[in-house]
Image 1: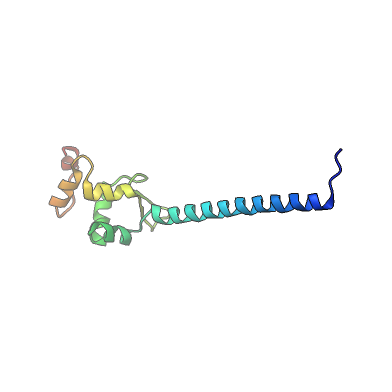
Image 2: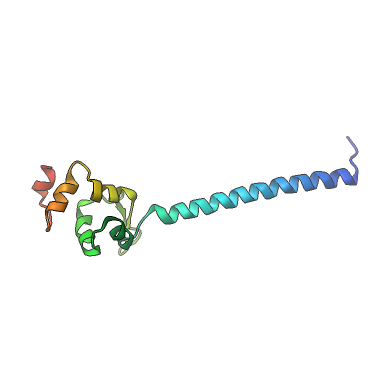
Length: 116
């Protein structure tokens, strides 16, 4: 076994401490990024209204045409959270549905929906 002086041990500890501090800073940066991503990944109905230009009441009507767990999520019985795909659905349209939604002021019938 090799004898190591106290000075060498101290230098190794300082070097390892710097590496640990660097890894901690990387972890904290990643954690911050993930938290920010989580906050911006899903939109409330008010945020969705702001982004799309639809009123909140109109969005509640259009939710009936969206797919649960694709366009929106219900973390509890009251709250709705919308994915980015909801914006695409409402603004750009999926298979022409958006054009039909924007032309109709009331609910869309199942026959109209299926014939789009």
